[in-house]
Length: 204
Image 1 (tube, rainbow, N blue to C red):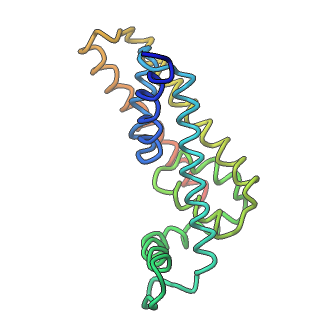
Image 2 (cartoon, one colour):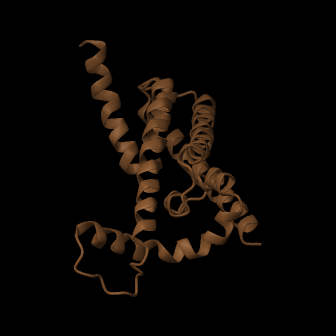
């Protein structure tokens, strides 16, 4: 099997999974790289690329929402096309969070974009808000690049640390299950704690 085929088999599905699943795919991918199953540098690059593309699509949706923002959730949808119906449906779902976070966001959008990467449940809303408030794309890209890089680096540091403590190999199935479970718990506890600290600062 040549190098390009091996790359396609491993990393294209990983890219698609990260694009759609985010951290649900990132966490096992990071641990697989800690075990030597995947290349850590390629996992990092693929994870960052998938995150930037996914976030940019939500940013573009925010720009689209800005153009059709007369479509409020409580208003009936006009006979417009599929685009209007799609925007209305998503807008109705995320409007409560948009209203809650808008005041915080306008004060320092780039800082909030970076911090929001560690606050599960607000990340997508922050990308949409960036589009609604028409943050220049280059400036927006700096924010999501820094935030995504910090989150991925944190996941790698934690995963490699756990793997080093347990010192398991790819053949030690029981050790993998135990150490991976510890990794997942530590990752969830860490991000939950970060969420509480950041939210307290946002809404104090």
